[in-house]
Length: 202
Image 1: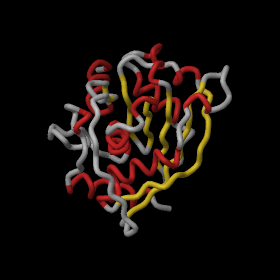
Image 2: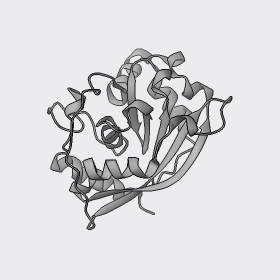
Image 3: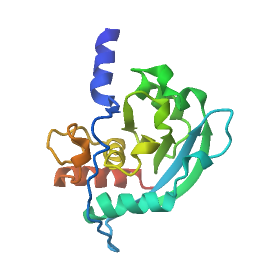
Image 4: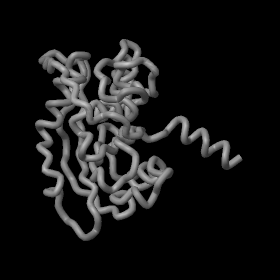
């Protein structure tokens, strides 16, 4: 029974493995002032107990959110707003190499008390501290390794965090294949995202 449950968990909550995300792919940015749904995005930097600040990540959070909006979300009437910025000290989550095959379970367990259920929370960690994953997304929570912040992995995992599953359509943001080509949501996926966001509103 445990094996069956583990298999189901793997199928539904699998983290997204690194494939060819490093291949450059340009998406024309589109910005809109008339958005149907907006949501705040908190950013939390994962650090070990021996480090106490996020300076090692060198991320411009405003530029990161603007890139997500212009490249992926505004064209669908969806807006992401920068929320709170914080640091989370967590040795187990920081070094996922020690949890090979258990990354999703560890991520969800270690972050269950640190996210706002009415927002999306993006946790950022060092790519060097995991072996195979680019990111994880579920239950308004996203884990993205720092090398994949400006790739289609980021909207892919945000999609997962808002209830979307993998797609087999090449070029779809939720596609399991050729991740560097991800650029479009389907109408059904957009409706699902907006409905999830409505349920999250206070």
